[in-house]
Length: 387
Image (cartoon, rainbow, N blue to C red; front, side, top):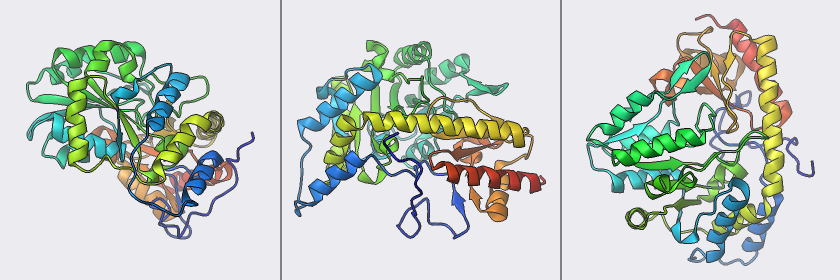
């Protein structure tokens, strides 16, 4: 591989949220990779910095063309640049859209266990969380379609925040599933906000399907949020693209982004993103190979050393969802013990909904030596743990 995914990067004392930990602690919890971003992005940032002037900027057409071409080449979907809006992040966009596309007191539908910040975007804006929980059976997750339809049909349900692919389970939604969700949402006048921030990071040989690419029904009733932040480890650039094919919906979302002051770029967001989308394909290909190998390493380690921990097989994201029901009755107690006993920091499944209390989430987006250290600490901690 021409790109380096193995050299360690000392991120302590760099204002990193993830690495603001004690000297002996190893954080494998936050969805923040410990890989340097693609050197093509670094070069673009350096070139921009050399101008020495960082005044007000606008988003050029070249940015939107780069996004459109990336989705054409990587995901077999050609969104029109006219459908696109610039935003300073996926989460701010979701929160803004919640305010604009629903009313205080409305239900916003999710599928728990799911990314914990969705709850914040709903509750902090005076809406109600309504979960159609994914059904967990024999190590796999499925949709309870009858429950989903019942909850969409509730007159107070106006929005669904849909995680595609799914975090934390890593599930890649099938086209038939996307079609069915889209049809139900349209039938019951529920707008779908599709968070597709993890879409680029799938296992080698697997691809995710953008929700709006499936058919015109989905396209006309959805707001898709994408970003290079997870793919290229550039979250602090604060950049996202909002893709809204329906002009009426787009006008509402656009008004919200501008009212909430979420539509202005910073000097490095555009050049970094254009470099990522036009020059970063090979880097992502190699990243996916590394992530796939690390998932296989973790799965083999569990089978050999911690067979009581069940690995949920998901083919997207660099996060792994582990069933620890044979170890503990509450993941919060286990994660606290792991941190105290071994210094390993993993995510407590309770954060992702009540049906996550028997799970933990761990990131494998780090050099192999770091992952190996984390797995050894996990074994040490679980071996010593008594519920």
